[in-house]
Image 1 (cartoon, rainbow, N blue to C red):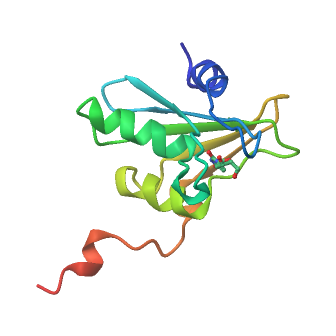
Image 2: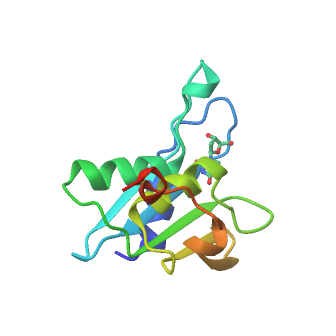
Length: 130
Ligand code: THU
């Protein structure tokens, strides 16, 4: 299955009783495997998790830690952008040139790299004082 088909399918499982805004994400790793996630909300609103975070958690649980491409989809007027926190989460596991494809359920797409989405990213290197 493609990243798009995978993200579309997992989006259907989103648990969104509060926002009613379903999001699906799928990512590919260097092995070629695809990992998917959907948003999971909570009555204690800040405890909810984004689709991208779910896909990253599935990847790490499967023993992989590198992302070569990622796609996110929602029923949105324009291609759904990852939130700020998810941009940082993606950057932890993806090189600056990794493409992130943002989609709407009606077929609009926009591609940006990780570096374009999060210029000036904080990384482990910033904690290295030699
Ligand atoms: N959401 C995601 O899952 N990913 C995004 O990229 C944007 C926002 C979720 C979080 C929350 O469940 C709902 O969308 C509304 O913010």
